[in-house]
Image (tube, rainbow, N blue to C red; front, top):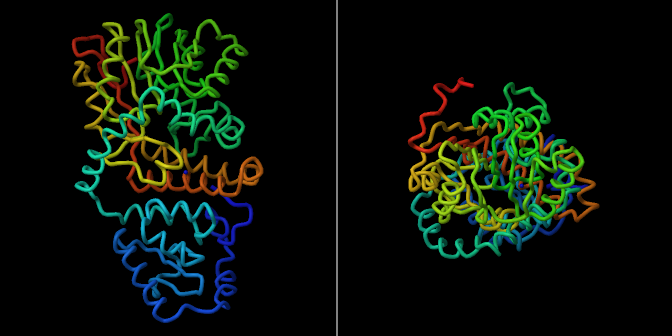
Length: 427
């Protein structure tokens, strides 16, 4: 959820900064008129109150600090001009990110830690959120139509394979890893995640698996290689499908794994297992019953499935900046919303696991790798793109640390099937 090559606010990961020198230079400029300074202080105080008064401090281009008595260790947001201040006050959830990307706002200190302070302080807004989600339901349904879904996915995942290679693991997995021990490296943790899912699904040689949203193909190839199943994998990202097909051909699984450039809603046939890792966020709650019917139609009577998805503790819309710049029309669901996939079709939920802290650890790895590759990102694209992605990754890390985001794995089967695992440890 980005990095600039020469950032006056320094590196938000290490906290090293030229902030104080920068403020001194800016302070030599004419100061604000007393009335304007008082207004700016008032507006920023109201912004802080609206987000729960987190332990952060705003600093204006003339050195004015709000609040003045903030702890020196608190995160600081440096606002470079009056226009940036007014936009931040008008719509903080959208314009902070836009002003940060354009370098009209900088952050002094660790960006992820500052955002975590903000997320932990934010008040819960059930009524406002629910109303916003209801009013947007019709629009969201249109935005997730088959045609629009292709556009939404390509907006993010067709950003370029070379871009993602800079900071993902060797398998090109862009979903939460699984760390049996916190010190495990990212490559091992991503392999552990795939095996964790396969164990839950109890895959057997010769079975047929359908995967909805296959990324660059790692999960499908892992299932074929290690469990001798055949896989039909759907994805509407052209670049990812091309990459996955070439990899399957190169590794000798072209006949065992079929990568299909199409929407999961067009799936046909009967399968022993259904798996979806990191796709549900793009489906939209208003289409969950439709997804359930698709699963019901393709699963055999003994079939079982697993959905791995970013989620929420309660229904809540995605923030405006992320929705506009990163994931159009995306919506991480609550467990209550996810039940609309299972209940209408008579599926039984067998197990729910929350891997929230595993995603935080995954994002720590991604952000560290992204920082190391940031100069290349700037060369490939622009400094604004690099800053946008730094903010996205740091913001995601903060959200999982603060508990604003969850990571659910939900295992399910048909309600009358008694061939389900006796315990969690059953093979």
